[in-house]
Image 1 (cartoon, rainbow, N blue to C red):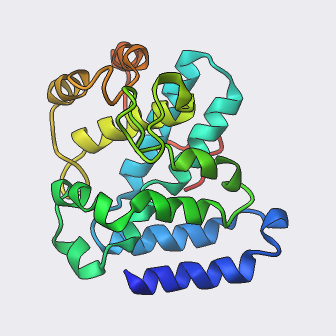
Image 2 (image 1 turned 90 degrees about the vertical axis):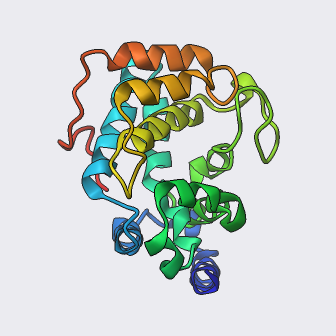
Length: 219
């Protein structure tokens, strides 16, 4: 909404000179999440499950702690971009409708601006804007293709999509695990990295979702 843009603009103006020395203030992010929760489109337990899932999968891939750290930083910002949607619209919107509003309200652009405001998330701001890129190169904004898309972004896209599909309304699509797998596999090589997607569903075999706090997670 215009009010949200005004708040972000004011915060950017005030923080610009000091942002390189500023530590990420978890309280500010917590307030933003509470605002999103008031619209019915954020659930703390689902968020913890989503973070644990993504970090466990990244650890399973054995590709290093730097990637785990980047995935975590990206998930700190997800899905705060939805705050740009007017509150009255958000309260009436199912996940299906909210997804269709993404282009109109530029969720990713808002998350990029939020990322730039904090020392902890600024290093991944240039990855935030890759979240709408697709493996086959038909995404936006730059039309990146394949491994041109950062691996942390590719991991985050897979895990957040799976959580969205399998979570209950209004936070998700309430699909079964098999339904979610079928829908995502249909987009293998198009939206998703096919090798990572195959690895993900192999990883899920026997995996138990949890909300326990690990990796020093703070949301």
